[in-house]
Length: 108
Image (cartoon, rainbow, N blue to C red; front, side, top):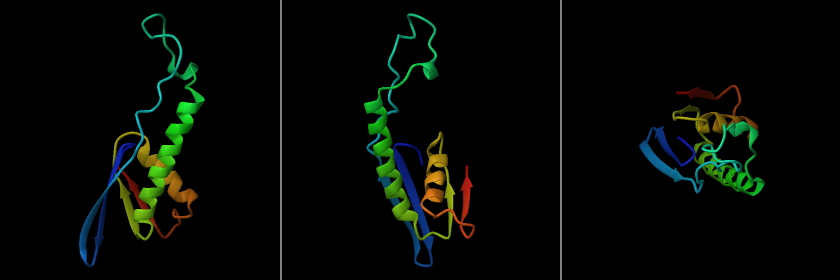
């Protein structure tokens, strides 16, 4: 899983089923401000456009909701992937009351 796609493998008594969820998220919005070629660039000090960030967050919310809909009935979930998406999904699962003690989560 990453911000662009999630590959979900459901294993049950009936066998395996693979689902692919593609997000409509573009790369995280670039920060506005001076070019890194003109002066030292501190990305954390230069804010992103509010509109760009809101659009990015909105697309991620839709994407994570689609992933959660696919895994809602799972007894255990193992989340693989680079970057921040797996941690963000885990937080959303807990926020959606799907992070109870009866469920097991793993990050890799």
